[in-house]
Amino acid sequence: MGLLNSILASQGRNIVGQISSKFGLPSGLAESAVRSLIPALSQGIQKNTSDKAGLESLINALANGNHQNYLDDPDSISDPATTADGNSILGHILGSKEVSRNVAEEAAAETGVDSSTLKKILPVLASVAMGVMSKESSPSSGNNLDIGGLLGALLKSDSDDSSTEGLLDIAKKLF
Image (cartoon, rainbow, N blue to C red; front, side):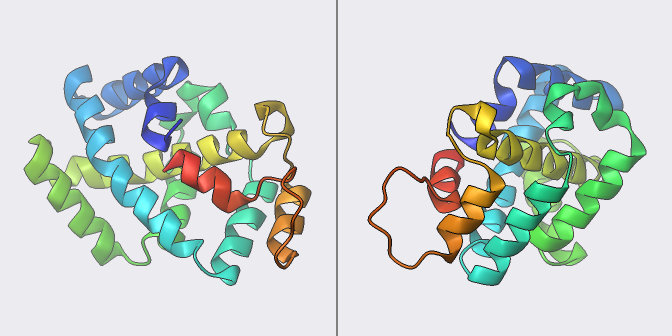
């Protein structure tokens, strides 16, 4: 299931509802904003995980963060700590505030939601995206993975062991 679909799934509907409420948007516009912003986050994550250092950084963030909380408790996205966490994530994913501004401006042109609101939504979605990846990489996800297994898969050279699914395989499913 793709990242967007995971966010918009039944639990994600609560997330869209929380975004709608937090930012004063009708639910249709909130969903439109999510649909418009997620591709840029997905591309940023793909770009960052294309090299070993970026992939290790993501694995470390997934191992040390409590990102699943954003999915398990959608009310938590209203917490200022979620925005702070999301801004830190955006720094890694998109690289600069200028890129974030450009993403928000492009989404504004597509959705009709003003770019200042989209700039505020972006860090919340970054946190939620990490929650989706964290949940997908957890042993309870059915992927039979843990962060140690992901790191092991990363550090292995070409392996014939197809029983261990690597983070890049998960990323392909998410994006």
